[in-house]
Amino acid sequence: MRAVSVAKIRISDEVASEMAEIFFDPQTSGGLLIALPESQAVPLLAELQAGGNLEAAIIGRVVAQTDSAIELI
Image (cartoon, rainbow, N blue to C red; front, side, top):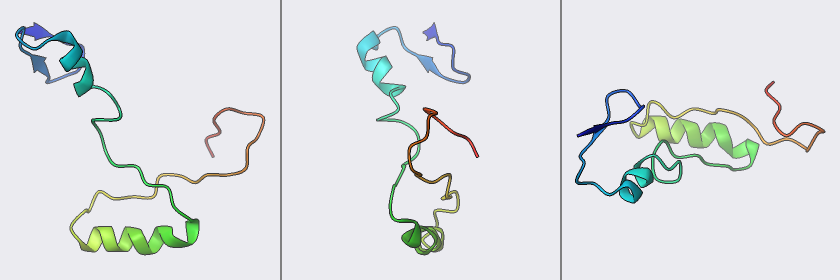
């Protein structure tokens, strides 16, 4: 097994590097990100949590473009 820099993950030497890279691609791993009108966010969050998705959360909002590429508020 080869070691990787991510804690608690080991990848067999038999797995091709290309396949291992897919595992870490943000498009194929991690949580689901949804964008929708702000007025629909709280009702959808309540529905997701009622369905057992207790980690569902509102994490941000889309605002008009500013002179910054990313703005944390």
